[in-house]
Amino acid sequence: MLREIKYLIFIFIICLFLFLTVRYYFSDTNKKNSYRSLNTIDKKISTYAKNLPVLEDDTKNIIEYVEQLNNKKKKKFNFWKLLETNE
Image 1 (cartoon, rainbow, N blue to C red):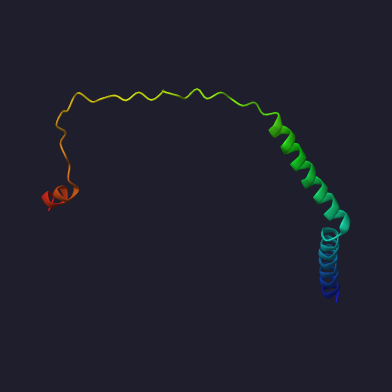
Image 2: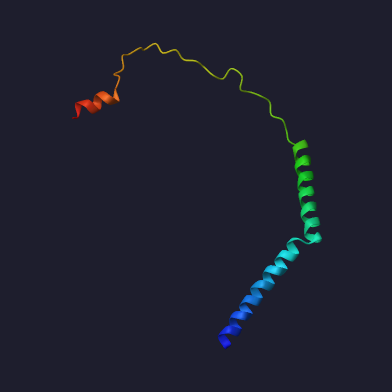
């Protein structure tokens, strides 16, 4: 008997918690507060974006092309030929 009452109390507490959580989440005050916080975040982003410094582009002509004068013959490895010799 006590066991059933204990389980009933547990179920009641869990249902009450879920009900109050859902009720608060869908309340008008929560919606207003979340909208206001999103609105203030957008305002902060726009003010910070206006104050950002623009850096000067200093990347012109930084690539130096090097011609390879040493045309040494490199040994070409062929994967299939390596497999054939190991049989």
